[in-house]
Length: 205
Image 1 (cartoon, rainbow, N blue to C red):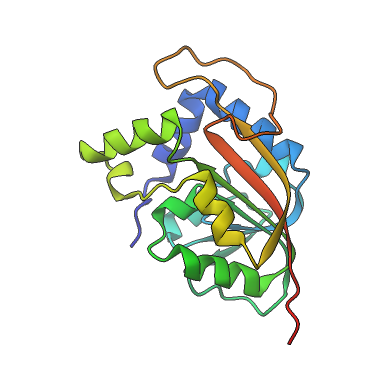
Image 2: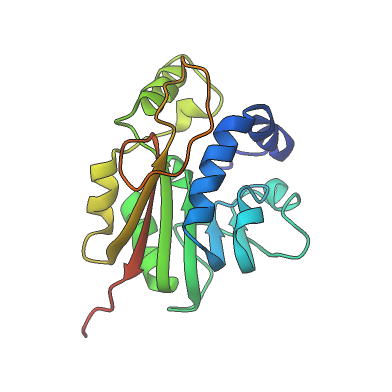
């Protein structure tokens, strides 16, 4: 299902919420990413802090029209990634997980195509922001009514046996009801925006 057919509206949220975006962007920059496949890329959010060659993958053709012109753009389903085994150095997933119908299958597909690293970021269900967005969803919000948020523990469990966790970072320790402030990236799980960098485990045949 193509939930995000409004790339300008999607990007406008980040432009309007500049402090939140800056905090999240600082976390992505701290993870030192390069040569990545961005799964559920939308209109190239965070790409200004990812180096090297980028592949934007999105199920929405409309979103890909607003990806950066120098990127490779692929319209495709995250549950059936159109790439060969071990062909992608780095896979990057930001918030896409909460809009995926079968998260286990997504992680299996990411494991299949990824050669080295995975970085995955969520707005954690067990955070003030996760609860805030879930409440908006219950009230019929255009996007959050379709979302299924997961906890930090659930994310780690999904990666178990496929990826070894190398680093965790988080931000947004203030609540949605507080005035946003610029934060330095935290190397802990205190923030609502939570990212894991993990190394692929090469299974023995």
